[in-house]
Length: 215
Image (cartoon, rainbow, N blue to C red; front, side, top):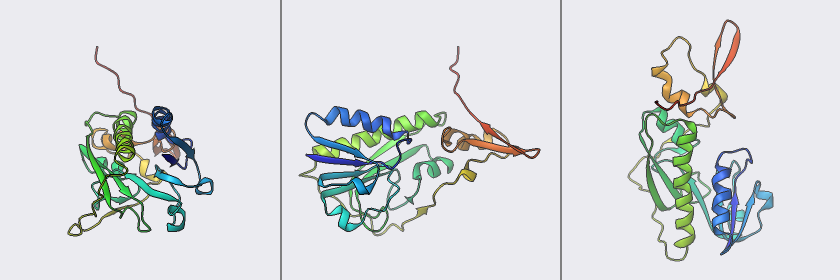
């Protein structure tokens, strides 16, 4: 198969998984990793993984199938950074869905869903490891079941909900509130791109968090 993976940012932590996935499959398939839709050629399968661009119907027609991976129990939780919002809302399990790309955001037919448990103690890197592991499994499924899969439309009886794009201000910690009450926010903040921070005495401070194993 001729496969293209479009991931917009070379700095996104998902790239480690993507490189490993490509290495595992490159002997049997022709695989390209690109950063912009301007680089899209065509082929059998296009994966949109942490893609910031809108891929139009004309662009999708270059491929037999264009698939998205989205971390919510669709049609609930369409939009941006769904697993972050759901953990902030207290979720201890997230649903990761493989679906067909459409013009309407996150509205395509579902190929498969995986349920992933997120322990309450898991920090950002551990959460990513769980999430990206599920994404890798779904990419495997797409390749293995490409010909025989029967996508299912999203449940029309469930009202869609939408998450907004997260901003740096969403990583702000309130110094007047307890650490325990803000632990979920601390543990989901990307320490490189969207670090946790707080402001006091006219200055802003970055916060880092690291797990220390018990002796």
